[in-house]
Length: 119
Length: 119
DNA sequence: TGCCTATATTCGCATAGGCATATATGAAGT
DNA sequence: ACTTCATATATGCCTATGCGAATATAGGCA
Image 1 (cartoon, protein in one colour):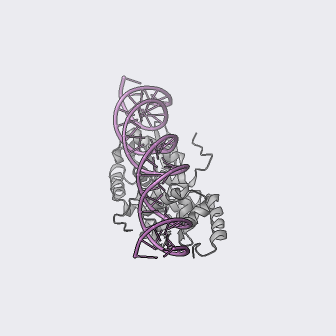
Image 2 (image 1 turned 90 degrees about the horizontal axis):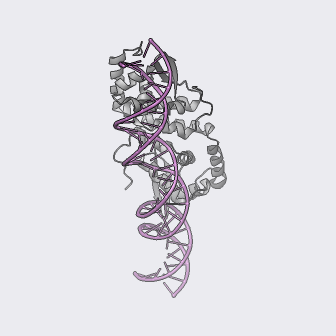
Image 3 (image 1 turned 180 degrees about the horizontal axis):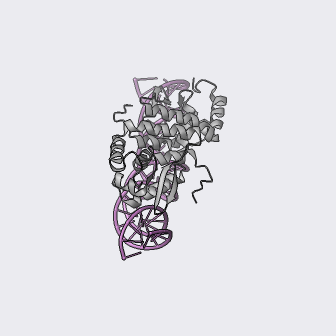
């Protein structure tokens, strides 16, 4: 079901990073998994929009899912290559370049605490 | 002329990396500057296509130009942030994920030697 | 004029965003 | 067990936009 048989191409992965919303999602997932409703609440975006971007990220092999009853928890996929690892390091750096990300992290902390929201 | 007043947004920079041709160009520029005709020859792509992608990369602040008579030499812009630095490290990693890049580097060496082509 | 490089035009594709709706799971009531 | 309802998530349809590619053309310089 969640199998990602073919390794996505490098430019596909870059494209996954090349969107503000997806960047914010990836950043929010750094501390740990979140479910869609959490992301919707923290980002303040319509649910279908988030869902679509999550599907895109999953297709690029950047996130994985864990189903738990009604909720689907998304988390960053473990880096399986040096390239993937470096890219995640880029993500950490973005924190300082995109002020939005810091605000998101703050909102996440307020809304979800250090742990996941749906726990 | 070549001033890059406003720092391009992070997702803009990622978008610059999110194209196979631009990835190949950036990779070819890693050892040092090249002029457009060199890139055209090594990549085997039409000159307008290369020119357009170079303009894109310049707009994203990833390459700089040096004009020398007829030729315009392109080179990687020096990293001005940790983010930029990490991204260039990603580029080095791509080498192993995109077989095309290794072939390009080989063709570049044959066509231009270790130095620049137009010297 | 002839060479190197950049841009304009046109077409087509990928995809972002919004809306409505479908699917899936769980809970409550009968 | 069946039905109904609520919640969580995904998907279809639509429109708008951003590019990528190819061709033709323009500018700059010897």
